[in-house]
Image: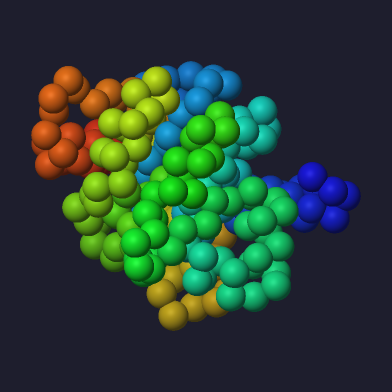
Length: 205
């Protein structure tokens, strides 16, 4: 990370913690430098920033958030933050031809990185998460050695209410739960329901 990116990282970390507290609650697992996929509910563009800020420094350096290319490269500032500060993995929200949308995630996992993933795919505005898409299942099937950690992000949608651009200070937290595993011969639909339930179970912890 160059000096400019390091300065931006410190600035963002301070800003996010000032506005939200960015508290991490390790309920079902300790913070550990092992290869993981953190998967969480998704209600705001700020989810990516909050979960990044909640991780300890030693985990932030080895963990890459998934970012929608069309949104997070729409301006030079967003592109700089997600590329130079977050080291994000960009994904396309619209499938293009025969290209596998999961390939950037596969490449990152094959390189030994951990990931922050939002299995709903797009932001939801209901209290409960939307049904999970198949990406988490496909990655769990291919990378059985990677630890799957459910997480629930509390209150972040209130930091920037819909239609507003100025953030509002609101205490937020991220609760990390007990790891789950893909069962032998477990059907995709059953696994995705179980993974979603593991995230929702952390809401009232």
